Each structure stands twice: as structure tokens, then as C-alpha cells.
Image 1: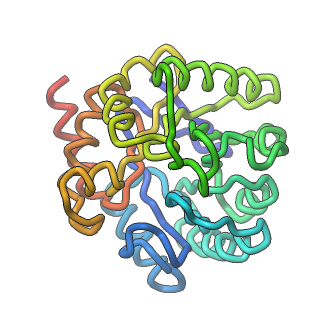
Image 2: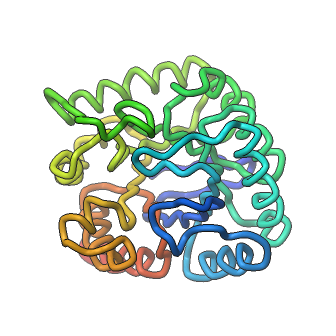
Length: 274
């Protein structure tokens, strides 16, 4: 069992948790998750919390394949007011900021966030590890081959699982050396991986238990689901639930999703099969 110290609030992973996605962006690949601001943002946050979200993950940067990158200033202008607003309305909620900029992470924590979710594993902003250590908050360490704008340009692995494990071992050592104590592992589905890579990764997910860290699964409505099924992201809820269930059976501890109610139901039902 893992416990995360989120700025004094202890988050237990005795059972899998659900992380709801809140995109403060205009070009997320899933259109229903775009432009959540003002009252709409608070209504969505409230609905996710009521449906069983233990964490809300707030991001202003589109990380779909080929997306352009906002500057730290542009990203902060989008996410900091949103985090402040949600924190004021729901002070007990655990908020995560989805950013690869150390300056945005620091501002977000000051505004009420207590987890940093960095898709770049410190590669885009080398100051990230030191800032997270200073803030004393959990850090989501994700694997990505390349950068968001290049990651799907012919990703190749000689040994998919071994290379990702080696990546995590190296990055975890750097985080520990910097003083970060609570680390969450995210294998990075869809980030520098083909659809066969993603399915192989899901099948072998249990192998990441050797890292002795909570495991985050981020497959919600992604191309691996809707392109395999020949549908759209808007039609990919059932497929998402299927793959989330497989992930839970293979050791996932956090489901990062657009649809909280369905993910919470998957957690409850899979628990009955253990």
C-alpha cells in the first residue's frame, strides 16, 4: 500500500484512485474536455469530485501528437486562475498541475495544487526536480520518447519494457538525489509509442511493480482505442473502460480519465475479482 503526502493531506492508495482530467486548453484531442473556465469549470470539478475523483489534474498545455508548446507565461495565465478558483471552491480537493515548467509548478502549488504531473520527466525544464523537492510534493514521472511535437515520428524500441524500466530507474535515482520522496510512475501511453507498443505495455504493466511506486494509467479516449475500433474519441468511452479494467487487473493504482463515474465503477467491480 502506498501513501502520498499532498502538502499535509495524506492520500492512501490502499485501493486504486481516479484522477479527473480538466483541460484549460482549446485544442485537446477530446473536444468535450476543452475550454473549461468560469462556472463551467467549477461545475465540472464538482461533478468529478461527486463521481469519485480523488485527484483533479489541471493542465493548459495540449500534449496531443504534433501539438505546439505554450510558453511558461502563457501556460501560467491559463492554469493558475483555474487552480485558484477550484481550490477556493473545494479546499479539501487534491489538485494536480499538468506542466513541464518549474515556474508554473511553483505558482500552481502556491495557488492550491499539491501534485506535479510532468510529461517530460524533467527533460524540458531541468529545474523541475529541484523545485518539486523544495515544494515537498508528489511528482508524476512519465516516460516519453522524444517531445510532444516529435514523439510519434517513428518511435522504435529494441526492448520496450526494459528500456522504459531503465529510464525510470535512472530518473528515479535523480529524483531521490534531489530530495523528492513521493514518486508516481506513468508509462506514457501514446507518448512516443505506436498502438502495438501501447497494447504490449498494457499487457506487461505488472512488470513495473518492481519500481515500488504507485502506477498511473493514462489511456482515456486515446488514439490506440478509437483508431483500433475505427471510431472517434467521442465514441471511445467503452473502449477506455475495457483497457482501464485490464490496467487495474495488471497493477494500475491511479486511473487518469475524462469520465470519472465510469472509471470509479471499473475500480469497484475489479476489486470484487481480487
